[in-house]
Image 1 (spheres, rainbow, N blue to C red):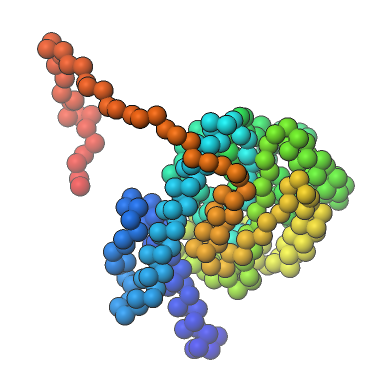
Image 2 (tube, helix red, strand yellow):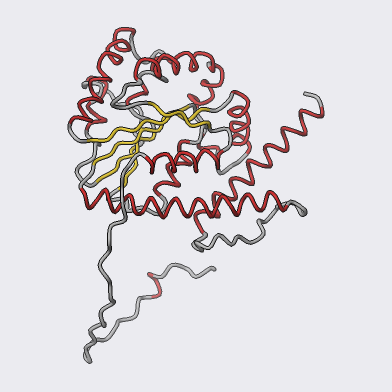
Length: 306
């Protein structure tokens, strides 16, 4: 690797690490005004980068406010929605799911991220374990990977037979049409990143102790089989892009833009409106003269080290 390429790689890794810091700030900042202080570690003389961060947080908070309205509308009108998030490893699916659910009620909007099927589940009807997590009235379910595992990782890694693969493509359009006929809205997103961007994000995970858990042997093997996954993805999109449940592709090389674009598009899929909330007042606490609060034994207290 020549020095120019090495410096560019270092710059991009540093940018990715700073983006990770911003992710943590997103979980802490509650000020909806969009006023963001200096980001630790940010180089001086970079007003444009700082302005972009401020703009990102302002728009993120605005969209999250709309997601709260959508949640209330779904619950009050008894809607049912399934949103699928697919894409290559490190494409940013988990990041956008985190931003969508960050301020929502988990009883209304829940995430399903199933592990590999066990021995019993492998003998079931393929869609059976996914069907168990479908929404009831007033619920949204976000699948972090879904039944499309069969068209992707199972196909590429040889975890299913050719017959099972073809049966999936015969079944999945009818399965999704059946869901739509039953009143479930099905929205499907594919997060698309370039070969170079995935390479960068994998390097970041390798060298960041807080992200190493995200790298599995299957993820590493996916790097070697990039072209196989590309072919599998192209077949999947072609054979399962149906009017009742079309695919939507999210360009995801830029994480923050991908999150905002996906959330805004998701909101546009629903003709929702703000549900009026009843005025709430805090009742006075009832006090009794004979009530005595007993002290907690010191042996039960968590040590106060901070």
